[in-house]
Length: 352
Image 1 (cartoon, rainbow, N blue to C red):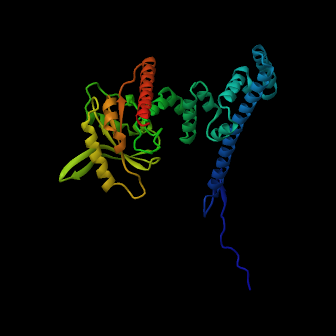
Image 2: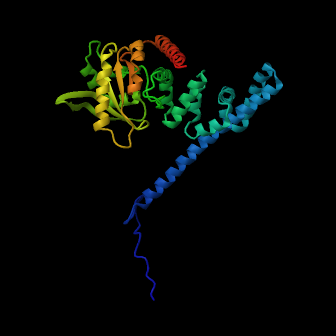
Image 3: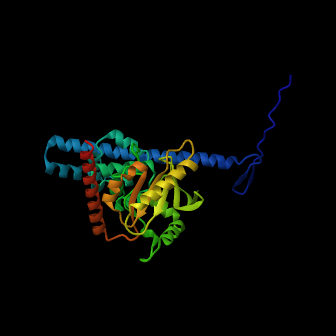
């Protein structure tokens, strides 16, 4: 019995600095393997750094608490910073050391820090530290981790009040028992479209499609564009839906209608018709029922509440094509949040 030798051979030759391989590009395969390993090592290193910073902050906080003296706290941070910098480098300068104390104080649970550190860098946490409300802080932290926001994306979403806008939208549950918090906003900021004051609905639609990437970013992660002016033939008559999207997180089609001016009650019937048609002819077996989003320049809160549109899977939100100065923006969003809270409480009392 003769042993058969493998006929598979690698014909490796060197041409300058390039390795040539006849059967497969072994060099690129190995390079990718090494690069991926380095990336994982880098992520692990960042994660470990976050955990060390949290533990340092926690230990100093505990030590200061044990001594119960505010002046001692100030003094010990300065002293420790000097000693740590000398031995471990500039990461432990006084300013950063105080941030570690704040980090450990705000994120009180080590387990939460471990989970978030798999995706968030120290720069992410520094962007989160100024947020005062615990609910807002965790919203942004979890969103940044789950949607893999960069530090710039995180800062942008904080400045554009994404948490507050999702809170306002949350007053209108899209459909009963649907966990849609964080998937929709109110209002939507469409300032990037640079619309003229006298724009028409078709102008707005065209501008959105010409800058579709930014529009989808404003809608939120999980949205995928399907079709513009979706044609529906009902009783031999043509109907056209402005924009059709699919949301991967909700596993639903999302029908979007663009309206100029204040919300009108007749918009509900139009959207109901579109949703029923989509549900009958476009929805796949593994998908949930389609939902609708009516975007207006101004909403009519009481009409929307009386129409109980959420029972038909319809959400109404404002869109702003121009953003006011920061102070006015904050005041308008704050007022919208307060109004939303009042409506939530009123609804709760009515259902008791």
